Amino acid sequence: MRHKSAEDIYKALLESNEDIGLATVYRVLTQFEAAGLVTRHHFENGMAVFELNHGSHHDHLVCIECGRIEEFVDPEIEERQRRIAAQHGYDMHDHSLIIYGRCRRPDCPSRTASAKDRN
Image 1: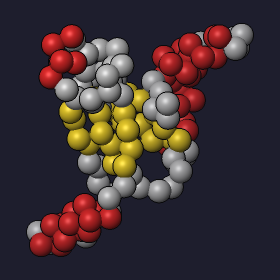
Image 2 (image 1 turned 90 degrees about the vertical axis):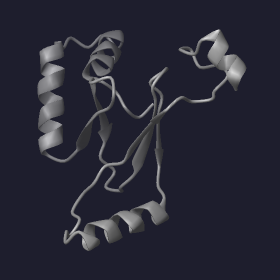
Image 3 (image 1 turned 180 degrees about the vertical axis):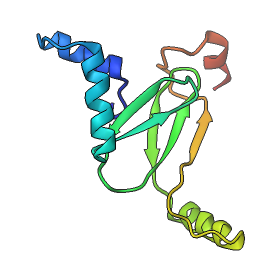
Image 4 (image 1 turned 60 degrees about the vertical axis):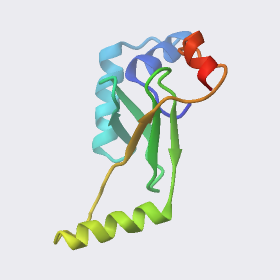
């Protein structure tokens, strides 16, 4: 999984027997964000998650039941967004597209039995 919360990173460090505090993890992530090394996202649940900044743009699909995050790139959507910005007199410098939905994975840990039956 590419998107990790500070708490996820902290737990992984503890499991690796690293002696580090949660406040230090937050501080370092904030420094990495300021340096452009990681990108912070606030998806629907309100919790910040971080991902390495690979320098290439992508958008996100987020499952509102299990929290799964998938990345995608669609050149058609990108071009349409540039045209919309231009039509409104903007030069687009950055943007974010997040699609919220329910994944259809049969093994989704957060799906109810009735939701599984619908798919």
